[in-house]
Image (tube, rainbow, N blue to C red; front, top):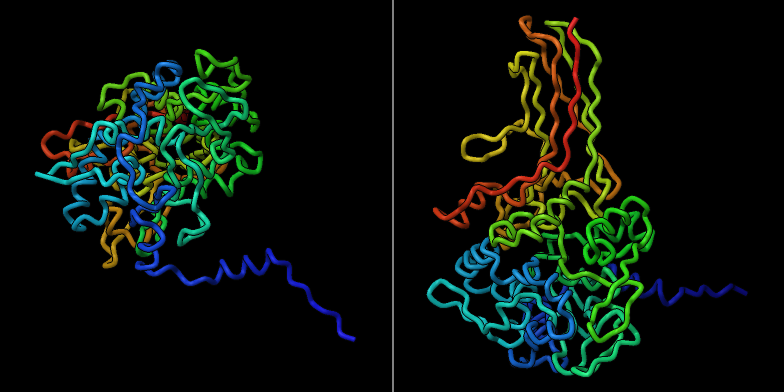
Length: 462
């Protein structure tokens, strides 16, 4: 008698998912009423902007959290001048296709209420929409629809919002005289953040931004460290989490009327974006971003102790991602710039080697070792416009606890004075200066650069 073969249900489901055909656009429009954003409401119908509470009301009981949020990238999500410029360009070039797609994360209230209008070259919306990603956006999220998305992953605002009296969060025993409360396990998971920090092209499913996946396959995920454990913690706690690979604790009092908590999540939501807080004058958040950047990487520079004039000297530079639970850089890696600036001078200050300098227009020299991605359109031409991207020609980023090794060689001139000083700096800029010039035109400022880490070594000449 032949033995029967039992295939576990989970395997069958895996096979079904793995080989399922991508959704057709019409199917997606049926499933997601605010397509190409995947955000929706409980009823699947639009709600009113007034259904969402102003963060000014939340401030009454949560003043500390409100102060942390105010000035954050979440609070600035709508008014961010770089985002606004790119959004307007997309609106024009795609005939409105990107309005909902970008708005689903940057202006969720406006999308689910059909309250965003593009008129006279500007996006117009109610004041509550312009508050960006505020309290009632996140705390009215009831579920994620990631199992219904084209990639079966969280993406493009794949959330259900349920504005009303019930506010959802990470505590099981919350009580409030102002509103009802509900515990949400989703709010404690990286999957919550992934709904907006996981961006795919809605037509091709090309992964434009894949921060969540970078974390999901990392040692941080293996250790149970969530996005919230670094990005909703004081910066010193985030550094501690990366150093110890253990979830940090941050005692505090989230509500003036509530109990002291063993663990309180802060709401600055700071990552590496030093540029926009600086442009908007949010010094506190810019300062935290700078501190986070300066704790994210380590440099090791190996050089010979001695060298001879006329001979070749080789330097080996190792960059290690020691402090980020995702790749360095991450997010929109096609515009991020993390690069090595290596300069060698002799004892009289004469420069004899340089890689990674900036020209007068703020462009990085072509010989620089840059960590980012290079995106192209369907014709194979370079592009920084998300709606045009079909693939990356390369993606050179450094995974969590991973490293990149670079080799440099130069010949020591005969007239060099001993010793040689090798100065190596890992630098970071959120966008190329040329992109800022393209988007902001004559009003484009000189973008700030953060020197993440530096190391000097010397080489004596015989």
